[in-house]
Length: 176
Image (cartoon, rainbow, N blue to C red):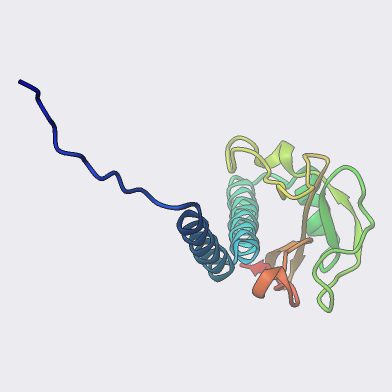
């Protein structure tokens, strides 16, 4: 007796069908990538960090000044420089201090550098923040000044938030 098994028909995808499916997936991925606009999202995220940094700088300066003067003491170091030269912009750090600061159309002339870390760290701020896109402890890429009794801080290198990272960068300035 001879056993016979039914013939199975094996059907798979042809090479042409696979190429068409891969092409369709590539088109969909490209469309999603363009719709997401990663450059714009990265620039917006970095600018958000810059806004947080300048806010932290201004708050730390305010707290230090309030606590020091309330205790009957004199302001020291970089904070004393800011208070004695009101309305002058100073870059935070110790190097590259006379470069202009701010986006095109909103640049300010920087008088010099001022180092406030000795007064603010660690009691008022964990560390003086610096712009992650090229800043450092010696040149934070942030500028500060005292004007009309309020501290003002500015991000020197904001990035454009238009489609594909185009357009005019925003002016990131906080005053309190």
